[in-house]
Amino acid sequence: MPPYILFSFVFGYFLLLLAVAWYTSKNSDNDSFFIGNRNSNWMLVAFGMVGTSLSGVTFVSVPGTVGAGAFGYYQVVIGYFIGYFAIAFILLPLYYRMNLTSIYRFLEDRFGPVSYKTGALFFIISRTLGATARMFLVINILQIFILDAMGIPFIATAFVMLLLILLYTFEGGVKTIVYTDTLQTSFMLGGLVICIIALMNQMNMGIGDTFSALSAKGYTHIFNTDFKASGFFLKQILGGAFITIAMTGLDQEMMQKNISVKTLGGSQKNVITLASVLLIVNVLFLMLGGLLYLFAAQNNIVFKGDDIFPSIALGGYLSSAIGIIFIIGLISALFPSADGALTAMTSSFCIDILGMQKDALTSDKQKRKTRLAVHLCFAILFFFCVLIFKWIDDKSIIDVILKLAGYTYGPLLGLFAFGIFTRRILKDKWALYVCILSPFIILAIDLINNAEWFAKKLALNEVAAASLIQLSDTIFSGFKIGIEILILNGLITFAGLWLISKKQSN
Image 1 (cartoon, one colour):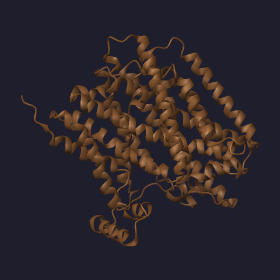
Image 2 (tube, one colour; image 1 turned 60 degrees about the horizontal axis):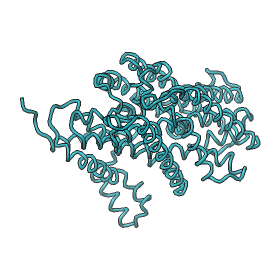
Image 3 (spheres, rainbow, N blue to C red; image 1 turned 45 degrees about the vertical axis):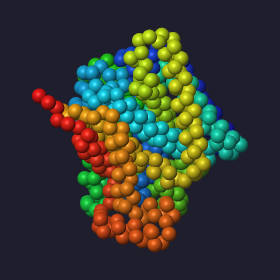
Image 4 (cartoon, helix red, strand yellow; image 1 turned 120 degrees about the vertical axis):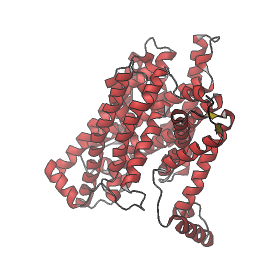
């Protein structure tokens, strides 16, 4: 299909988003932007958060994992499901009881201003890295398959994408995002289902035939029982649970939408509904991945990993309609994560760093100007980060950046766990140093544990590489740390906070 036609559909999609944003942002104020006036419908929030939770990386990468790891990713999904219950019945009651707009205010009430700003700072760093990495992946696909042929440079593509996100979140914030995310999740899931049906029809398969063929290839295998492997099922399930607790329950972007629901009960229903829906949706993504690999084998297609879905959908192997559906589904998966991150980072900076809610002297008009300026600055920061990823131009950079989430959310996990499960008094001024030190300790452990990978990435000479690998074998004996590195980071932070605390007197 000519790239101009694909581009016209993308442009039309953006116009639809802008129309929804214009309608929903009428009479918006700062409370609308930050928490949607605490009047969001829990069903809309739950459905829209499916798109936020999945993102463009899931849309492209999860199907790509099937070739090497079968349905092993579902181990992590089971962990996600468990983690959402912890959010619903431990964290949400706390947030509603304290009537929080920023969840990091808990850290201020529990420990003091340094812990409070430390939590907000680690959130901002985490979201900047994660959101821009996801944006780069999707923008790069659009660039390669559509915009290069039109002679549009990458820098212009990135600028326009961020400008559009900025336009439809500038005024309405959370109030707008609740509706736009619902719309985009509908397009994404619709695209997912249609692509599955198209592949099944192309190979003349029904549901039963599909699962029989997937099983025959070993693609439906889920549980890894090798306890030394990073994919061992207990590591994956436990790691998945804590990833959800940290990256959803302790993340201002995700919880900003949850606490915009009027009641605690409604918010809890939202979280449990989301958890249940994600169990089903991830099965569909893995099923799609298996079908893509079956189709590739039948047609001698050599693409794999992150390349297989866009290459088959846009490479002329299927109908032009599927190409359009893929593009719409892809950008629908991108924007719920990008717009939410931009809005949440603006909220966190204004409330947590600038102290906007506590400032009774500044007029609402001036606060609005400040909030819009901060929103614009974060959009510019996103733009430059996306350009940096393009400059690096290394496909593995996405995995590296996503892994860094385990480094940056670990201190948040340790801070909140220490505040909730102990009654000790913290020396607040030292909290920042503990939270900075913990990721560096984790980096050293990770470097030794994954010696071969780091030796290759750091281009170490043979002697240094051999020494590092030997040290790894001596310490770990082949045991590989996986996504549970987040838990280890949280434990180290917790231990450090214990050392700088004292027992509460009666």
